[in-house]
Length: 315
Ligand code: SF4
Image (cartoon, rainbow, N blue to C red; front, side, top):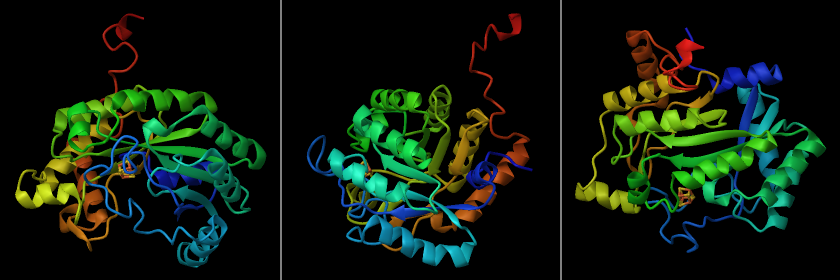
């Protein structure tokens, strides 16, 4: 039984074969780190951003693609790829540099798509035009991965995110006419959020032209502001049972066509104070699937709130 629309099956349906994402690191920072809208970054963000799987950023995009392929092709038997500009904020680059990196990745013969991780306040038509040009020139499918993390403005302030939900909605609506996929990243267990917040995040995302979602469990990296709060006991992590409940609530409310890239992140334990309750990611995924089975629900089971719920029965 499929309880939700998985990314692997979506890629297989779309391309007719296994497709693998390749992490690519660019020499880029973030407006929430360099002083434009903050200097310390989000309170959970470590010095290497999300890039613990990445190769060094001083390697060219082509070299990173080739090295990743050499590792992945024999191991996973995948021969088509989606380079993923993963680390920090990948549209926070001078336009000429961004254009060159996008072109280099998109023209690779084995790459069918390109995924760009960024922040909602770094979406601008000039950058979207660059992606549209790559799509037109090479047939590359584009996914823009937007970090949102929470739709609770108080939580976004608490993690010093430097933007709120308004910028996220603006970004999604700017991207929509280009026909790119939008993947929204959510953290389901921020200490300032409860189940009500997580459910509302699912409803807001479902009401927008969003095609993919990636759900993470918060992990606490040493030497971050959040690590200090955790050590001082001023924030607590919810239990694994609570995380499972929040994710199942979220997915039940999510539009059934939205693809779920992940229900929990894959994180390294080293250099962290807290990571996935000490469990492997697939153990948590299995617990989530067991909860769907127990409730007898699946993705979209509770999605009837869209499209005029109160009057639908009269038309
Ligand atoms: S937006 Fe991303 S890269 Fe920037 S500080 Fe926050 S987590 Fe780090």
